[in-house]
Image (tube, rainbow, N blue to C red):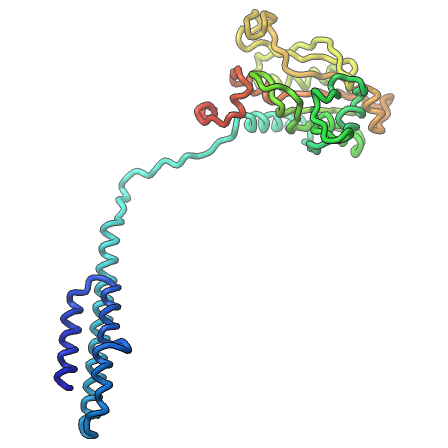
Length: 339
């Protein structure tokens, strides 16, 4: 039995030299030291030994087991070290190589210009007001002095959810909320999305953005309106920018005006872009109608105000020379990367 134990030790150590991975090492451990291993099988025969031989063989068997376990452990450490060295060689990084360029996102032109406009008005002392996109008919039309038979209230132009609830067609509705909840002086802009039942083409979409402005105080006149819009356009388009006002009609302002901006393409001389007029229509404005003030609990005999509505997409298109509104919504990186 002593010779058998010594042969097992020699065989185990010989096989250890050929082991190349952790699985083979574990298989060897089971082969020699497992419950059904070769060493265990020898120890089961100790019952046939004499009382004098058992202690000697038992001591030898324990020594051989310990030697094999130590050899397995040492081989395991060697394999781990070799694997680590292999990984270091295979995964080695050359820190002198240039790094990979990380693509950094940027603001969409709509957001960039919206932020710019908000900063301009904040600098003029305006607050920013927000309101619901799903609105009551009263705030979107009635309180703004838009009569029930007005074309804008037709189902062909407005997305109605019920007879009394709709998707707002203008952010002027926010102005009503502000005037109902705040006493003059009031100086706010209300940017946001609006919805109209328009067919998609180069100049129309069913969803777009508006920036409505409202000022209410004692002694407000058209001169204040013109000065505010002139400042806005010069900040947006440069000191050479000029505006003009043309008489118009809006139910919620009186008097009302369409505001045009000097054509960027021809400088006022007349071209195809401005239809040879020298100016391009950009927004609507006027003095707040006395009925609108009264609807919000503000005395029109004591206070006056002006309001304007600016289409964000139209401003962006003029600012960057974009000729198709759809380009701003198609998420084409070839287009957006230019800004």
